[in-house]
Image (cartoon, rainbow, N blue to C red; front, side, top):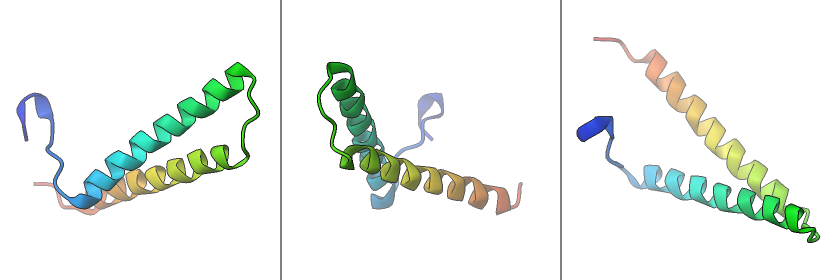
Length: 73
């Protein structure tokens, strides 16, 4: 662990999760910006945001489940 409780990125899978998160945030921002500007939005854009969000939610719950099953101390 690094100072202030920050854990270093450990694997390629963790890096993939970071890129998925950043991609989802950029796509969501692009969607809301285009809706705000009144531009016609492709039907694929909300589907991409939902798919990436679902992927991240699944991995988050999986991490919680794995941590819950580990013995404490």
